[in-house]
Length: 95
Image 1: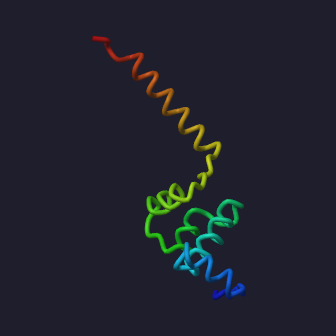
Image 2: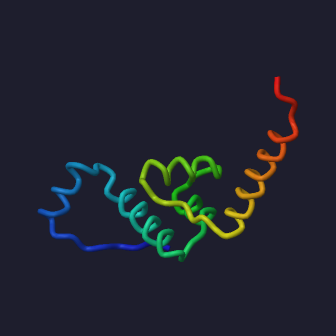
């Protein structure tokens, strides 16, 4: 899909001083908004931005200070890992 927006020339010139690729900045802004509102997934975010891997998506999210969702399943997995480490430490011989 192709979108067009109308901007007053003066505002467009001002924005292009800081954002030379205004089209890219617009797509990134739309993608970020859709992602933050839960309208698109990380995979779809990467697709919108032409990012090739999950690591690229995470790097982009980090650069743009976007929080990644943390689900109950993520919490349960983290708690299981911590418990596993605690058991491993408790069972290991101390030297």
